[in-house]
Length: 68
Picture 1 (spheres, rainbow, N blue to C red):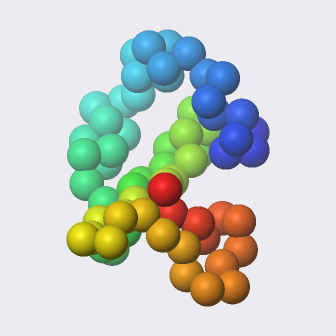
Picture 2 (cartoon, helix red, strand yellow):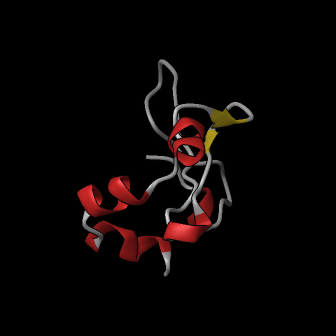
């Protein structure tokens, strides 16, 4: 499922299907700016942003590198 399709997922159903280990992974990140994904449930990893200037994208970023 493309990440854009995840907006249509029933979140309650997805949460109920998480294993304990998968749920724990969602509380921590990968590196500084990415979350873990759960491929088994088609839950994509997401890129987060933080800072005094708000959300932004790097120059020449591809669509998957944009931060919101």
